[in-house]
Image (tube, rainbow, N blue to C red):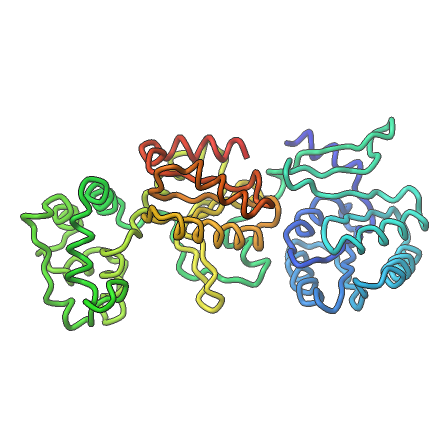
Length: 402
């Protein structure tokens, strides 16, 4: 990587023009790699993307990069794009660069024309999302493009990527929640599913088994230790004095013992949330081998309802994983599509998405998803019931191949 970055220094310029689109991540990466120390980053934006440009400007200033924002570009008017880019390029003294990954296609085409007309030697570049590399147009001595790997040149956490989008994940966890309990719940689910049946009948409302009972009712519920000895023992190992659900909740140290907290705990016990802990545990086992920089679970933004069950980053690349114990085509496809759309929205074309589920034929589900969402080719993966037998290895192969 050091050798690659040394090559990249040959293409750094005094002034770097960035075209601002709806995703600030590619420009955030390019700004750190393509401007000389003491140089200036110029953000060209339309009225629709000015807020994004201002946020990006603030993030880059925190890295001690000099920035200037140039708003009011009419992204739907080729002549306006050309004229304003041309005027900006003419006003700058020193070497000039244009990075055209962001912005619309029209902005890329006409900004490129403008800077090349002002200065034919302008260093033009784009970020290859599939290969995680920067491509310098004609950057080699013989006129060929220079392609430089930058996948680990800029390091971001999952929260760091979210912060670029003004999204805040408040309660994300960097370690599995109740891992031993989760393993016992998984074992029961895969063996008979009796625990979930009991939990839905005793912890959730009769009218709606997706809604917890009132806390006054939950406080008197006790789990039958004779039917579920391993699950009860897992909570005893946490220090729960009895098999009362309220004592279990207190022993976890994760759920507040108030009406809302007790209901959330009941929901956790009755649902398949343990699969998120199983998945994060698998990721942590391969973190070093896959050179992951960040791993976590429970990324939820309340206001926007934005959520990743489990996520990781390698450099600035986002890996988003959705988890469900469901095995139906409808639910699994829905979960996969939601995760894919959110990952692409936040992590751009570099992002990769996976679904961990109990579907019996994950390849068939993936093929159907791709046929209905052809733009997802190469960026999605489904792990089914057989893959869960060695989830860590299967996740490792997926991440390394991507």
